[in-house]
Amino acid sequence: MVTSADALVIGAGAIGASCAFHLAQAGLRTVVVDQFGGPAEGSTGRCFASVRAQWADDLNIELSWRSIQAFRSFPEQHGFDVGYRASGYLFTVPHEAWPAHLAAVDRQRAHGVPVEVLDVAAASEITPFEPAGLAGATWGPADGVVDPHGLTVAYLELARVHGADVRFRHAVTSLERAAAGWVVSAGPEEFAAGLVVNAAGGWAGQVAALAGLDVPVAHSRRNIYAGAPGAFGRRLPMTIDLASGTYLRSEGDRLLFGGPPSPRSAGYSTQVDWPWMEEVLRLGVPRFPWLAELPLDRAASWAGTYEMSPDSQGILGPDPDVPAWFNACGFSGHGFMQSPEIGRLVAEEVVTGRVASTDVTPLRIQRFSQAARGTAVGMVF
Image: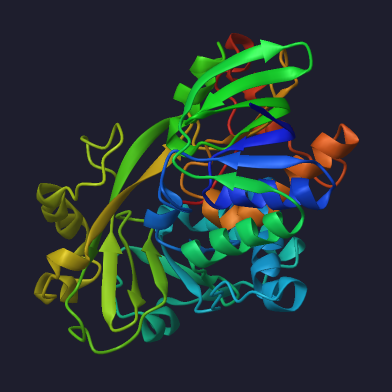
């Protein structure tokens, strides 16, 4: 038997779940399919769970700030606590990056984002560090953390309330164009859908290839190393050193840390790259000397993948040649933090035929055409 839907969402991570809720809320018969046995088992469940509105371009600022406000209001709006905690976000900034960083602060404040500019001494009271080479720091008090599993489950439950169906262990094996949209084989079932939303994360390129489409998204592994419980002795907010690319924050009584991707990051893997930890420490210890003495808990460390696009920015919107195919993928490490707004924008465009609330032109897949290569959205970190 063929199951009919107005919209078939591929992927039950944070973006796919948000898309499903917003589409179902708008009145579309919506089905979600996912290859895993439960929600948030791809990139979402293995992300660093941090959210921020400190970006250098208007679009990313707006996507993130609107999403943070959605996280904050989730209990009142929807009756779910998704774990939003305004624990803050600290950037330590070297001299050469300071002018551009201050310009970004002006942009952030213009969008209503609360951001403080700190001198090195004030910043080191928040997170202890060595100040060599730094011009200052910025602090986002509304930035913080959200529970990835809690958010995804909440969106899927809300989607079900509005009539959506969610199918796990339903890997997509074929996508064929039909007069009224698509015929999709996923797991043991076949679906007839007027619209397909590609929210397949790092698998988005492979899924699109089944439909004969080119969506340049691929996996890139990131490693999170965990300290032993109680080993550091104080809680730290998310802190990113822009000079070295290392970052850290507390989770409960543990300290978590990571750094730039390793040369072995390409492809899907959830195995921790232990040799790369030595490079992360080589980069991070000059700024955070106490990392060198941090006892490690190997069992609490983990790896996950970013869904990377060529310019590290998301791909959002219909395919220019196949409008019944809608991409919501490739957000390159910031899809989880922007998922509420991504899902809302998908539904806005699907229902009305356009996005009036935000200029999403920089996220269109057309930018990867030969004529448009080299144009990218600016970003912080």
